Amino acid sequence: MRNLRNLIQAGLVIFATLGLSAPLALATEDSTLEVNRSGQDLFEDCNGPETNRLLCHGYVIGIADALLLEKSAGSNFAGWDACIPTEAKSAQLLAVVNKMLVERPELRHRPAASIVATALSEAFPCNP
Image 1 (spheres, rainbow, N blue to C red):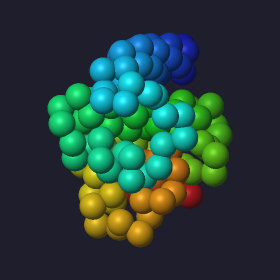
Image 2 (image 1 turned 45 degrees about the vertical axis):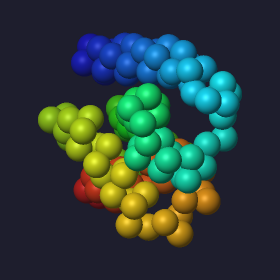
Image 3 (image 1 turned 60 degrees about the vertical axis):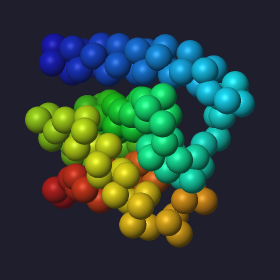
């Protein structure tokens, strides 16, 4: 029952994230929503104007939810495995990801999803 509840919550968060992200993306200068975001794109969003920071927030939480969803299903997210504590707040997750983006600029050419998954997996490793 708990897994079902977690699955429903994750689905609602992802739905809300996607629902909020699209209108915000349309409000940006270039009026496009990039599907294949780079780490540099994410860095600029996370450290940009408030509208962009909201996009960053939604993106990071969406990847975190995917990691949690796969973990609850006994799997991993494209090879990444994170055990994010239930008491972790979104601000903490954002700080972890932004720390990697700031301190490891050599990674910014990589896909944003892989950077988020790597940062969260390194910060919240699972015990074997």
